[in-house]
Image (cartoon, rainbow, N blue to C red; front, side):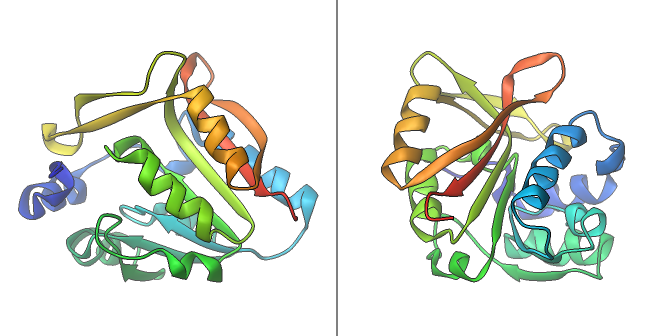
Length: 205
């Protein structure tokens, strides 16, 4: 499904012109930080991080004590990420075209409002779980007790894209089937019980 993210000219212009608060000043940053605090408890080390759907690569600036790599569509990397945060490592990736073998090279896979915009979330998450080495952070994901469903919403520049609501039971079954467990299940925003942040770990860890 071709969403706003494939509208190369308009999405990159809108992202480059956006003036959202810095990640560390955002309302949802504390939940993301909580996941990293939990990782530090498990093992206090410099993690290799892969940011799937990295956007402007702001996470790499904030988490610069770790080895960060951001991946996204080529036009997002070239026209947004490399301009706003040129200090980071990047490479091109399209979840609907490329394989996921490279995930095995990273300790932590982060999806910050990435899976929530995948219409085929079950397929994408299955591939990620199959290839992830240790940890996965899913941030700002809409969950529901009803059947999973899609709806349109407006993203950068008022462009239309997809918002995926995932059935919590289906999600938990998929996690367990792929030998992962949920270490944290918290609200991404203090007063929002729908958007969730998860820290997952492979059961061998």
